[in-house]
Length: 203
Ligand SMILES: [Zn+2]
Image (cartoon, protein in one colour):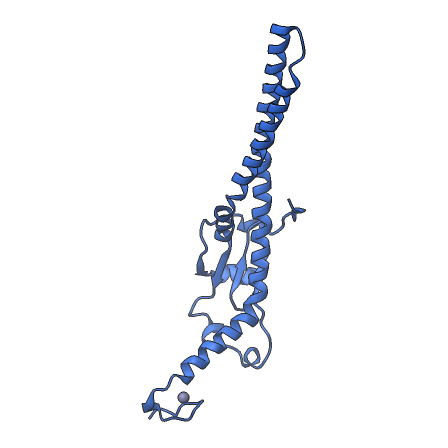
């Protein structure tokens, strides 16, 4: 005999949706409480690394661009001396400078357009782990944990043993050994490789 709806007290035979909806809301609230700080941390980690990468990619493109420019100026100068025994015409130099500026703007645009790809790459390095279903703490959670003893979901700092990079987000149980070594009791854990980066000072 099924119990009445816990929310509106309608008999089970009516199959109201109160409980399913209530559960959806409770899940969202719990997720918000437990996961928000982790998501924020992941977001700022991904953002920081993506910015670093884009800046260094831009640096690489412009370094190449400036080398070409220097060679171009040299060529213009040599040409002028060779044919006119004079320095190059200022307008020729100004054109070269303008071309450099245009090129650098293009390099920046090309760099910034890579953000979606680069962000996905760094998100792909985040490693989410769930404990195995047969773990005692999963099957038989201690009452103390359920009675308000707050177990926070937290980020694991990568250890030197965890240098191995994964190309995708994986949700997988962590082996017991690893779990114990990391001193976690239970819960979802997150690991991000190289958890330290220089926050770029804008661009
Ligand atoms: Zn109901």
